Amino acid sequence: MQREVYLSKIRDRIMQAAKGTIFIPSDFKDIAERKTIKVALSRLCEEQAIRRIMRGVYEHPEYSNLLQEFVAPSPNKVAQAIARNYGWSIVPCGDTALNLLGLSTQVPNVWSYVSDGVYKTYEFGNFILKFKHTTNKEITGISYKTALVIQALKTLGADNIDDKIVSKLSNNLSNEEKALLLNEAKYATSWIYEAVKQVSKGG
Image 1: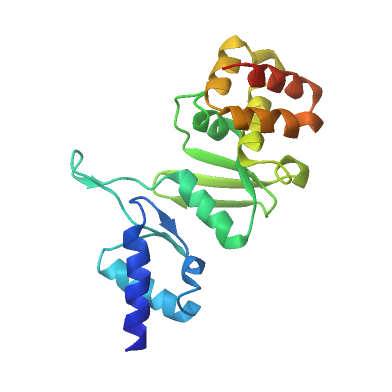
Image 2: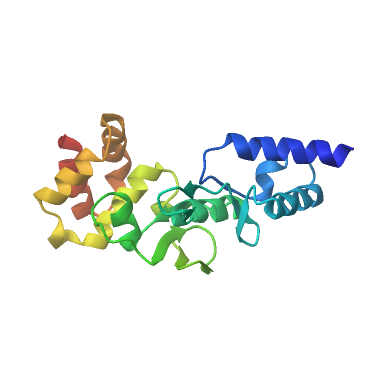
């Protein structure tokens, strides 16, 4: 039966992906039409091969033998999947940016992103995802890592950029990312660009 063939192909793609991978229906549009994909994902949920995080968002779950339970989905991966679903460009901001760059060990309950999409808030488990519309110049035309560093610097503020921050950021970037950061941040606020120059020199 053709539907079983599609189900098998979708299952294979999911099982071959790393545990913790997040999927949306359009990730399988090269295999089948949307209605068939929806039926397949529903069936895989019933089989507990995947779990539904929220409407239209699914995970290949990771089980912890130590905790004897499934690991909570990555909020950042879920946010990226939502953005992929709607065709948004997003970049973590605020405490989320600081956490992802190792500038803060505190895991936020609210994961915040600047986006070229609409203002939107989603909730799942104990997490809240908040998307805030921003001007395109903050997120388009520059690499993800450059945009992430700029958002982190904005969150910290000019008076809080010290040698420790510069060193941590520098150690978080490859030489190629530093070169790209220095080139792409030229049109950022002057104090941000001065900080970027220090980060790019480090390492």
